[in-house]
Length: 186
Image (cartoon, rainbow, N blue to C red; front, side, top):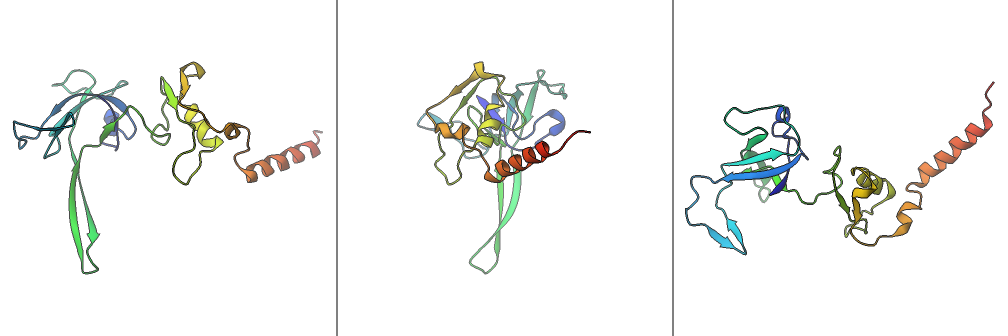
């Protein structure tokens, strides 16, 4: 399964937030029953996996002797946090989670700093309050290797690329143009 790392697990091994790769094996927790409950084709677990073997898309500087080259083990991370309870105190919550998510699709924020081989983009207005603007569209489109590897998922508002994204920036551009025209080179 394709997956994406959700936290800086081991940056020296390139297991960093946003890195993509493939899950090659899952080792179940020893407390899991031998007979697994299956619901809608998914195996339901009672505990996080003991270990997930992950192969990064690119090279990694770390080579573990017991594992094939490029294969890295990922174990669940534990996090503690407190939540207030009815104004009378707090409860401490201990959470275990494997910092991976299916990586077939992700947001422009998660793709920061990456070049992606093939990009299918949805430029339609999102269903939440913020609106996609030309800055965001440019950032997303610039993650691809070129226009031959980009596909637009569905129709979008064409004004996205012809409307200036920031009135303040447009005014500043105009002011700088006027300053440039008024400046003479001696």
